[in-house]
Image (cartoon, rainbow, N blue to C red; front, side, top):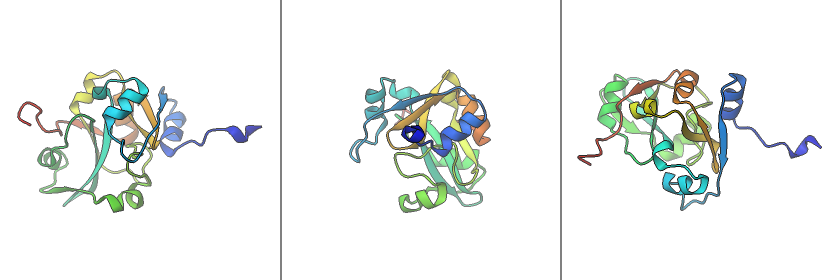
Amino acid sequence: MAKKKKQKTNAIRLVEQQKIAYQEHEYQWSEENLGAAHVGEQVGMDASKIFKTLVAVGNKTGPIVAVIPSDHELDLKKIAKASQNKKVEMLPMRQLEEMTGYIRGGCSPIGMKKLFPTFLDESAKEQQTIAVSAGKRGLQMELDPLAIAKLTRGQFAPITQDQENA
């Protein structure tokens, strides 16, 4: 009875193909609770280890992926500098699925339709593992941030707003 097999997302397939160790965390999600604090409560992880994936658009590079701690805000000036753009704006939500293959609340930095320039906040390097979306709502994958950087050809950079002055 192999029919009961869980459907694998592109992100999970890629991680498994590369033989990278990861752990899945399933949780109940709702349209009202797509935030990381809720996810953290559901999977028993500190929100500082849960990273969200945001997609922005640079005036020179086009789409850029940002992976930042869920309790921080993306600094558009910093990601513009890191990605060598003059100006960066958030990708309109209605274009997210068409651009990445993922929907809001289930957008993984791993396994997008194309390999976009990816930047992980430098704070990720301080963690042994971080959790990112595994490619669908209600599913996180926890893995080494260096593995995420390898899979996405990502770079570490300071891309969040300074919390002290926020």
